[in-house]
Length: 481
Image (cartoon, rainbow, N blue to C red; front, side, top):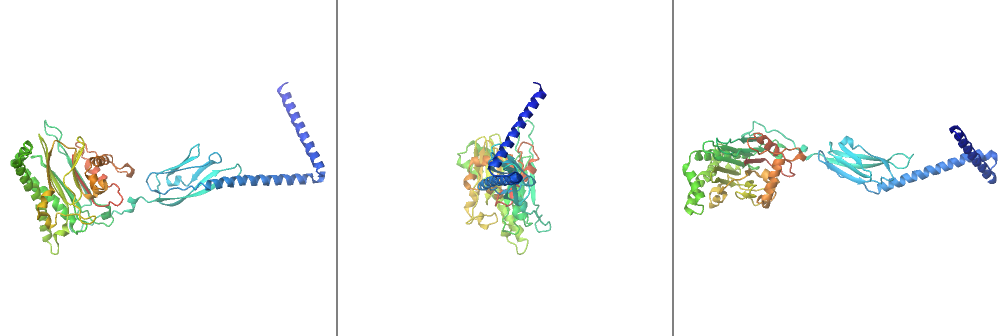
């Protein structure tokens, strides 16, 4: 049998089947008492009734699935603009299809549906506000697309809420809103690498919001002839009218005082060497201590007196109007190691960090007032009236170190939070990691403290823009490394 014959046979068989069904239908109609004239009407009624029943059943099935999804209690958590956002939920993939989330793409978000029904909404929201996303899906073929509204809110980036009003340059004792410096100390012929210095100071957001000036200050100095390093950081009191100038006067005064006494001072150099050779010798320690007092302690006292002179020049002003903290250090490398001496009054932190030996040595203790946020200031008359002032001095000889950090509390408070962390090596090691890596989630780069990197100054200034809720004070840091 050829192909045409086979097709003819199938058609004949099919036609025979239809004829048989028609005869059976007619017989059933006669037995039911339906005459020929009513047959068409009955057929129309039956088909319509069955179709309505079918549609109702299909609709009920869709409603049951919709109710099942509503009972899942889907909720989208709130997020923050420009911050990484992820929300996941699961839908019955065996009963629905064509799942989408309308409105997500416009907000900068991506919506994915995995084969097992897990749904993932992710990305960085690009707009703040309250929004309603529409979850759409198909249930039963032929039924309308189902939709579920999912509200979500994205908070604005906190940083964008802060204004940055430039300081009026015509105010008394004007100071730039930010500053940075890098001192590259090149290796001498035939010698090894020498340490560099970098510092940066950034006006805090709380001041920028109101157009107020930066109160912090720093100064750096390296003497090529004597190879002494001098670094100072000061934090002007926020409650003092001209503390911005008090911090500047304090830093510049101690730098000038120390560099003059260290330029050519063979007696001091000999006292350091003698102390290193006999560290338990009481007389040698006493000689060195007295010289440190002459250089470091008197430098702090001179800064105190100099601020008093500035205050007394204008009628109606007092030293407390220039209130400021102060920390500074003098450092030099010898064949036997590094000599370091420092003075510290106020809050913030001075730390000698050594990654090789896993040590972090605080060169003093931050002053704390009776109430939170209080401290002591260089301008207070009692600072130099008691023997307690000697406790503010530190001196040490160490083989080497990774970095000497001086920082105002605008940096130390958000970075360390507690006194325990200030004295913890692991916390300082974490701090160094943050300094090196930056804060990628906020778009803030790290600081490359490699040798001869002059870009470190601008990198450090940019790093100071890190975000820390509740910590919006001026930020200043100086590093010898």
